[in-house]
Image (cartoon, rainbow over all chains, first blue to last red; front, top):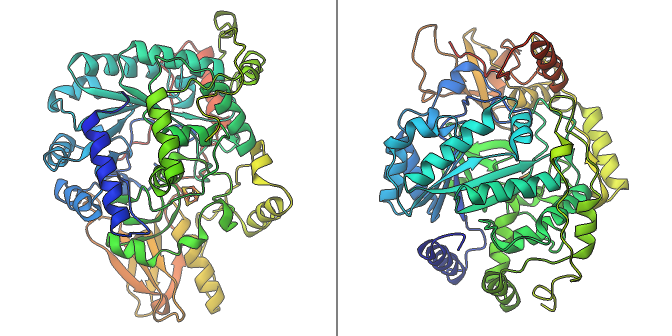
Length: 385
Length: 155
Ligand code: SF4
């Protein structure tokens, strides 16, 4: 099971309550950014470019808890910056856990091993470790040699200490689906609970402006990665969001689904775009011109976005909006389809072996393709919905 | 912020091509705004300059019409129908040695702004990926290990 039953039940009853109340716009996960500073400087990240006094600033524990209560979501994700650089992070997390929030603390894990003793294992707490792929790919993505090894050490230490650990992988153009699949094997072997996968967003503040995936390529890549999947792989993304990435579902963005709170306030409209700030969550809901966002709005900044923070909530909402959506989702959870797909396998086996730029020379000799013989066509478990 | 020309080209591209068919999306070139002192001669110029200041990832300096100066990170703006009702929100740059909590905020109506200077360093500029790759190979050739892009020192 990708998440504990209690968490699945809590989320389900929360969403049903919102539906019964007739709320048109309800949040699902609070993205709490208590600070922007980081101990990495990844080329694809557009989050950390601020003057020093902004990077030094941080939310207090009280501000974090107030935001969680104001927003009311059952899940709180703590990205950043690097949350483990916040000196009061253990206190912040403990306060959220005491409020029975399911916390995903996103970390690059460089400090995880040494700070682990400051946290207490709980079904409410999961360390969501940012890992961009196998060693060379991750080190390349985060612009730091040796980053992967340290993160894996952190993961192993956290698993051994009884913590829930998940991973979060962001892919850019040049990613190798075969390598991503091997990465999944390594992650599951290390004992993580489940994995999350997303295409990178085209931040115009990111240093690397050359490796953003277009939608066509994203879908092809995710189809190659996520089809013919192994039963041992556990994902903590909604199954219909995973199908959206593979091009099997079409969802519009739900920008209010994962609202972001930081030292600036409630960010309009979403985790990725900064079009202004509201002082209260209600003001965010009321004052944002939501019709200006999402691919169909024609907003060029949304045109290429397939990111989970905008689209996973759409999958969840769809799941609870119609009997068809509910049945589709229930089937995915019950039968855990492997999406057997001969064309996707061909795609995988013929994927060009290009390394992402001249930084790392990925050892192709050691990276033979995953050849799995399959005669199965599109999965019957997902057709006929 | 992308230039107006880039925004225009992007919109043109999307009008003629389905976003679902785009293979690799182009990034944006940044405007070089560091050190810029806009003229603020017309209402349109005031609004445009403050929009750019909002998107700018460095501190700015605003001189009010009464001569007082506020320097800091302009993190929000509210553009309303008149300059009197439009405001920018700023987190002031702390004095040297002072601790920063970012709790202090300053609001300045557009109508009170006499001058604007993009005075702080643009923290999103000048760190191209290509420059990093070049540096990486230089360090590698020099036998260095554990090469990385160091996050900036904050003190
Ligand atoms: S499409 Fe992406 S960038 Fe646009 S509002 Fe939605 S999540 Fe934000």
